Image (cartoon, rainbow, N blue to C red; front, side):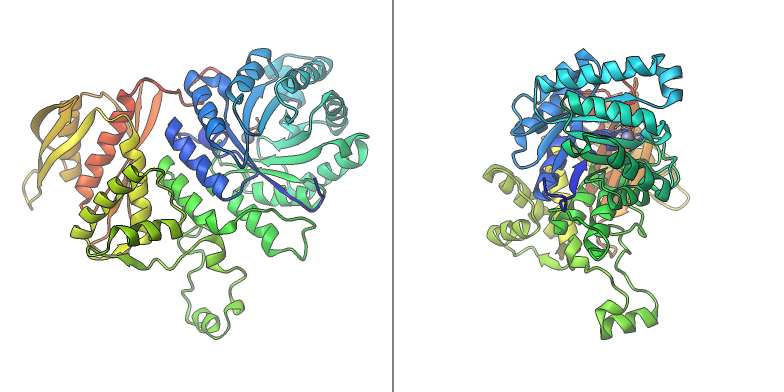
Length: 515
Ligand code: KIV
Ligand code: ZN
């Protein structure tokens, strides 16, 4: 690999999913993986196959689908983990096994209860075992950010000799400072005799808000792979945000000795997809992907940008995929116009049947809403994913009465396993009444952990996009729904969540499993 190439290793589907509540189904993981592949991400870490049968199936589905990016599975330095990862990745076009063991004194003594010698021995054994399945093996020293440099040099030299091709240096608890982390990377590369036989990588958490700065400092000092997630999703305060790493390196080519090969115009699409699926909204002032990232409010700035864009803009919005949210289609638009706009937006619906179903949804929407925007089309695609779930419950009819001084009331008719049933319920507001009615019919017994509504476009005729997070017996699911009527969108989201809960327990959330 040339020294001027920076490898992007996306772990949205693994570390990102470790965000409290950010669970994804197998189909959702495959959809995100496809979007990452389209963006030309080099390596997609799809999950932790030993964590549950569902996690195994999800990694396998991604490995079976993705052709352009390398697909990676995580494994502790244990035989069962590595063999399970090898099995999940069997059909991948290009596979990587990522094995890890902790190396900091506190982790070795208190968590692993192993001596440093035992840790080195286990790491070497694990890398050799992983090499039986693939010649692309990554080794991570968990909590490297609080490990002793001498010990890191020793274990990394040993695992490179054993066949590790990527050496990852995680700041697992987000403790490091940029100059310190850069020094660590430089010293490792200078002191490890066989360092030139592997790519050195970083994986930074954001506990002090320094994940991106620490990653970039490591790159300045020789790292040639960055592990990151879309929107900075991840365990606790998250991981380094992919979009910020990629755009910092691209924008400051005067400073960085390397660049990625990513198609940055796909960034906003990926960000929206991950946000829709996980129910984690993107804050408006978030760099690159926040709604205000390219908005100029002050008169002085607006004037400057109109006269010469570079007065206040260091990047072009279109280079990261912000399109003018233009009115694309209306109720008289035909199927071909619909198809070609989807293509321009990089949306691949797969089959003709799916295109027809989406076109029917588009016509319904265009009847209610005169102007259909790009963001409405994105929501239609999310609805496609929703329908792909194994739906036992469907919304047949919903009527709510909300009147000043009266208790809101909802009449709901659902089809459950093909049988229609109706009920009325009261609530503190129309959504509450609708949810009580649905729950009376479905009896899911789930706890509502999150309810959020966002407008997809501006204006009072905008579709509302609702995300709910439901929890039952340790299982977490997200449900989504979109409609110009937010009570209907809310009902759709709740029903979508219930359908996911009713589906066979495909996978436990990684935080719920025992690994
Ligand atoms: O943060 C961490 O240390 C990890 C490892 C498994 C790479 O996620
Ligand atoms: Zn991590």
